[in-house]
Length: 251
Image 1 (cartoon, rainbow, N blue to C red):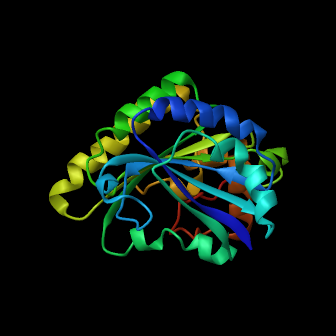
Image 2 (cartoon, rainbow, N blue to C red):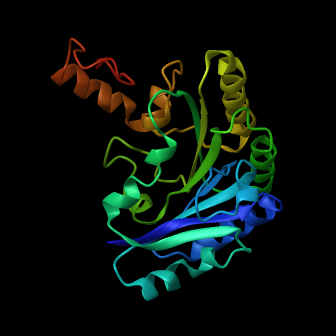
């Protein structure tokens, strides 16, 4: 069981809210986390109708464990940010929380992602994200900022394939739309957000957020890339397993 759900804030004052979020997350214990999603509000039943289709700041929160009082206390630094327009939080099975966003991601839509890692959320970066979220090219597009850190960042960079143990936040620019005439606008928007925020980023990226047209496999594995190439040469010299963000055999 986990204590999880959504807190939805108005878009007005989004920059100030994100700055307070940045500072508040430092007080969260390992078992709790909160993300920020800049998007247009879907017609969720706990939101007032006049918010539907308008830009909002959605904060997904989660705390492990089935003690609701303890979870609320752990999440208090982020639950006390601002005055939300709606929220829906409670105890649920972890698997239910994993599936909570599935109704927004039904098959058939067109998708294009761009991503960056950050060691912090600088004021200039926050201003850029809010500016770009104010001109979403479709109702399904979003920018989410995920909090990393805690136990994941206490693992040595060379202990696993994933090396980005210094990244405290990950941004995923998720462009999503329904028809081919929208392709150009949505793809160019996602690329533009990524390009504009790159100066604040580490240069690393999470491999699951890399799209097919990007050449960022080496950035995904950083200093571990050559070791992975050597392993590939040993166990898969013919590159049979290549339908992925591929590491070619090397040595």
